[in-house]
Length: 394
Ligand code: GLA
View (cartoon, rainbow, N blue to C red):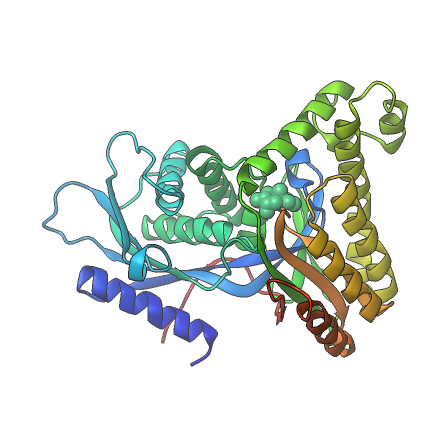
């Protein structure tokens, strides 16, 4: 059995144990790693994520016909003791938040579909995934998009990837309480296999960027998880909005480097640094996309180095251990590729985009880091995956 088959088997078995019958349909949505454009989506800029071959699977089946009240039933196989976390809620009337995050992803999705005027058909679902949780690889977006796809498809709706992404984002913003942007959900819903996704977060126009076949995408999980990530994230977002308001622009996307410089004297220092990260990061997206398509590892190295420095100093979302690991990997790579912190930060993962030949150098650097680290880091090379889709089983 390969990775996906094992995951489907787990979802199927969990469904059977929870409901005593077989599921009838399966759906999948991937996690993602962001290559460049960090903390830019909620500033309306450009980002370049890529879906990875780790995903959430939803097994789904009908509710029994005798039950009169339309309800949704869910079991989350990776949550709670022995994967027995369950939820059920009425589909009539206002849907209220549940007790914890995963319930709110499900309830929030159903509620958001209602906001689009869609009625959801009662169903039973079992959810299982292998996107590492809390690592910055968007396990939440994979979860939300997979549920949105499953319940909408089963309800006879044929929603565009963009709508699925928005539905999952609304759920996260309004029910889970994270002010995340749209990048993760769009990457999960709209990616193309072997490509990254160039996304304009203002109008959601997007296009696949081919990843040169000589390149490999490696994620290095530091194992570090900072608590209060959500509140720190929401604070960064508020700082960016305050900086945009200071300059009288709709979002930092609309701020030129010249206008930013001219505002140095009048803007609060912290807000100035936050804005400088965002303005610089938006400018790095296009050169990185070109380098990715051309397999230009020297440019990848230079641009990703700049991006990491900016995240660590101006945006202040790195940690000393992460900076140490980045430096080790960077020294090992030279011009064979780039490495930087990826995702929201405050712990989590690094992403390296390198020539395939350089993979042993990454492993060596990680080993060197681990000899002197409280938590061992771990490198995995992922295949750039396609976006959310129903699974056809034969
Ligand atoms: C998290 C959020 C995204 C994005 C990134 C930072 O993953 O969910 O919307 O803001 O952080 O780039």
